[in-house]
Image (cartoon, rainbow, N blue to C red):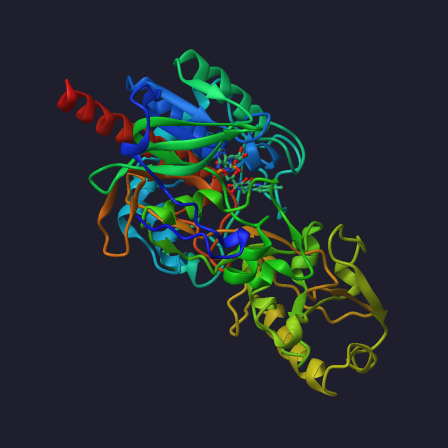
Length: 500
Ligand SMILES: Cc1cc2nc3c(=O)[nH]c(=O)nc-3n(C[C@H](O)[C@H](O)[C@H](O)COP(=O)(O)OP(=O)(O)OC[C@H]3O[C@@H](n4cnc5c(N)ncnc54)[C@H](O)[C@@H]3O)c2cc1C
């Protein structure tokens, strides 16, 4: 186990406590779960249902974490009841093919397990005590405005992915209207089910260090609750403590883009402590440098027919991409500067909540001047785009015909998508390297006995903003959280059996 306290506080790795230093009467559980968000709640429920004695430690005064803030998209497919009821064909194979095509470094075993298990997982979530509405929202939006159960929340219809897997909508939204907070309903149900299953939950109690077992594994946690401290032994510890967007030192070290000119999406305890606890036991980390950053430029969806250019007056991304894919490419343009240009025929609504209207221009030459792009650049880009769009084609970026329309009638409205002008927001995606069952892994691929991780503190399917689809975090956190809970309970039963 590693022990280092010489790093700045935000990067400090808490030294593990040797198990042999604990008094004999130290309390003991089969499984300890740190964090009661979606991942920890699902892990605790499955472990308790499998017969384990479970203790959940939650640092905040309430269960829920960032999960409770979230809108409520779960990325699910392969033929769910909502997909079937709304006439959308999907199979686990198509879902896996899509996720493999869009992932930076696809972990095929995890993706296939997730896709194969998706319909069962949908049923398990509903059995918590709610139903996804059997309805479909056909427009482009960040999230369904009402309670519609299904919409496209990724790049399924975006080229080249639509040629690599048959597109299907997989963004299942919980039946709560609005953009944020929908998942609180699921978290409240999860709390009820966790209590029924007999797991003990301690609020305002955070894991602050791991207990190092004698064989190099993890054997429990040290905890802190206000001024009180203590230890609890366990055969397995599941870290489900969320991401690190609220830790400036970790953000600066791993994802500096999240520290500049944008809003950090998360809660106070998204400070990466769980990630550092796993490091203390020798766990490797994956995709730590990849944030999710976005500035959605819809609704209204008519604006998707426009074209996005950089400060050279050139297009660089298909405008019908999922918003974090568009943002990913904006951030890679000179000066992170980008403009969305829309002709008057598509400007019925002239305001977007997050992206300000820069100005209106009567001619393309005036627009080039106003935006400071090279003279003639927009004229060339727009005439090429308009000519092909009129024929329903976009040979440059493969924008889907549904969103192609010539922007040839002025005056033109220009929305400023540049970083620092549009309202960008983000959170972290990287975390603890894990096996398909949530075991924390060392750099050599070996599992650390007794240590698991799930949710935003772990690295699973969501790997970067370029391939992200809304619903992946809640989807994978709940799915792999359940797997971690079951595996930890089995491991704990093995330890009990050995000791009896
Ligand atoms: C506004 C918003 C909207 C979003 N919408 C969606 C969406 O629709 N779909 C989607 O998939 N994702 C969405 N996300 C992302 C998603 O909410 C998170 O990635 C996900 O909820 C993380 O779940 P988690 O269980 O890993 O962490 P959390 O839900 O944050 O839970 C972690 C818990 O651990 C606790 N904790 C931290 N440290 C300790 C410790 N040392 N000991 C004990 N407890 C500790 C925290 O207090 C917290 O309660 C959204 C995020 C935001 C902010």
